[in-house]
Length: 167
Image (spheres, rainbow, N blue to C red):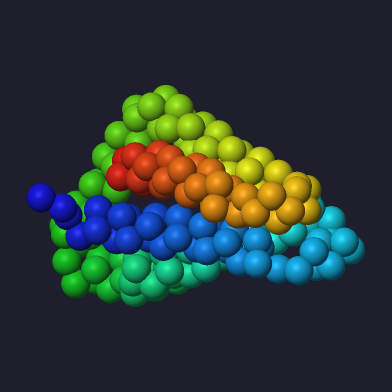
């Protein structure tokens, strides 16, 4: 059974994957003149910052009201004034969560590394598309190139989900 957190993560990572794939498709439809005066690296980094900013804003919406630290502090203050025991329990649970996270640190680091490796693979494919766009277009190889980014984006999503389910 899927928890609501898993559903949110699944949806978010799917949106992120689809955005990368759509963006890549869009790149292939642009005229060659677009690529002449743009540096490939700048484009790739813009793609990623745009995509991850969109993803992050979705994330904050999904996380809801208690996102801002000031609200958390105010809430804790009210909790302590209303029910100190309950507030201490919440704090204790928070500490336990932090300890567990520390223990899981090594596994987490490995999974995080896998995610960044997959991110690197996608970057490489995007770079290849930018650099080789003339060749891709002249051989009408857009479908093949889109297939490569789709496979890579799916792998990225799979590893990202494994990572997020842990956090």
